[in-house]
Length: 174
Image (cartoon, rainbow, N blue to C red; front, side, top):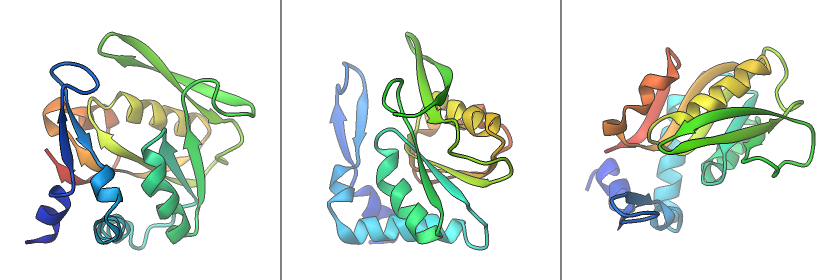
């Protein structure tokens, strides 16, 4: 079994979650497998080889899993991006569109210094709304986005189109 097939075997489809008609890509079996976790981390790091990263942005909450591992391995700081009211210090916010309505993400206002090189990480790229909001937050703080990376990309939702000319890397594509 090749590496990608092995990793795909660790993603579990959950039908009608969190609502009818949705097929949720459950990454918990992959996270429970040390070999699969190591392989994913190595694939991310390979794509970042030679790139200077000062901060890794992890999206609430599943973006924290690999985001913190990446930050540690890259010798970079980790910055959580969270839903409103979850961060204790002064924040800036970015609103983004959902299928029915809007939501918002926040980041600490002092978490990224102007000119710092930033990696944005999340578990899944779907419609691109949360990733686009993260891009806007980083750019507002003056960060230089080096790459956005995702464990899974749902290509049929075309979320990558919302990310402009930024480099995007996804380990698995469905």
